[in-house]
Amino acid sequence: MSTANATETLSLEIWRGGAVGEFRTYRIPMRASETVLDAVSEVQRSTDPTLAYRFACRVGMCGSCAMMVNDRPRWTCRTRVGVVARGGRLRVAPLRHLPVVKDLVVDMAPFFAKWQQAHGRFEPGVAPFRDFARVAPASAERQAADAGIECIGCGVCYAACDVVGWNPDYLGPAALNRAWTLMNDVRDQARRERLAAVSGPGGCASCHTHMACTETCPKAIAPTYAIAGLKRLAIRAALGVRP
Amino acid sequence: MSALVIRARSHPGLLAALLNRVSGILLALFLPAHFIVLGLALSGAPALERFLALTRSPLVEVLEAGLVAALALHLACGLRILAIEFLDCREKTAVTVSICLAFGFFFGLLFLISVPMRG
Image 1 (tube, helix red, strand yellow):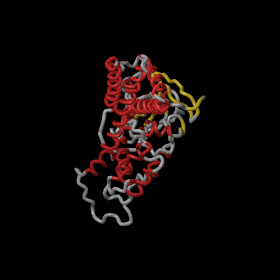
Image 2 (cartoon, helix red, strand yellow; image 1 turned 90 degrees about the vertical axis):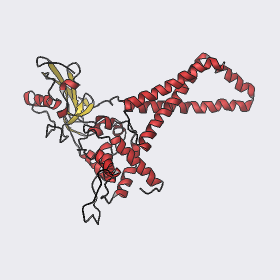
Image 3 (cartoon, one colour; image 1 turned 180 degrees about the vertical axis):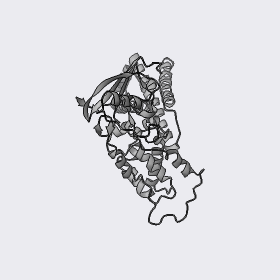
Image 4 (tube, chains in turn orange, yellow; image 1 turned 120 degrees about the vertical axis):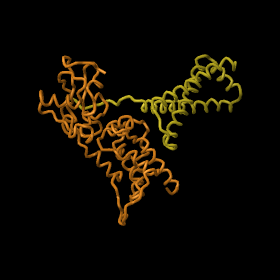
């Protein structure tokens, strides 16, 4: 960790433009304990007000400030400059695998479209439960759902995933993790359709178990294991084994 | 002005996948060659013996040790994937990849030190 004080300078390379553009270097005072989001905000407020970036909560709840920091996707509001700056330099870019709107802002629409493709929504069915469903907290299904339920859709895993870069049709870790939590929801009435959606081309079988999503998830969720669960369900279904 | 390119970051899981693939490709290239050599026996023992004499050179012995290491590495990396996907085993990827590499090197070295014993 850097022990730099405010007399040192941080060289902040920030992507400017859309899909085509350039990295521009901004020099601001180095403050090791401030966050990367603070540094980006300082550039926008003190040097270049046309810099576009996205944030909302600043405290790691909304996930909207996710960016590539030194080629690794991170929540910039939870990343201290001193931890990631190397030799007084930082490179900040928009999230990988998503269309760039401007500067550090990406279009999240393709990301959420894949959640829909993966049936990443609760389906109560035509005859929903009329009473509260009793779900034992210690049941295997509830435990499996709990492991992935805290996802806030920040897109960090999607940007980290090598397979998304190779295969644009791949649904990605977040959508498949969401599908897995719903496959373990005993109230859901569309599990057969969801399993079909995540078992086809670009589905769970496309995951190469690189673990990039699991390594980078700021919520410590492990989408790789969720996807492995979907693979097991898909194989059981293909073999005609009832869940 | 240029297109935005962010290079893929190296990480242990990517290394595991690369080791699995590269060792698999090496084995896939070796297998046809292996069968062609075995096929020499169909032309009589002398043809096969002439080729086997070539394989007793130190260079080929070292290459064979590499092949054994690749086979062990491919096996270990494959078992890792199967354990994660079918047995829901949790791992620390860097540790698992290190174990896979050690497994491969161990059997490669074992083959190499067994060469003098085999005469």
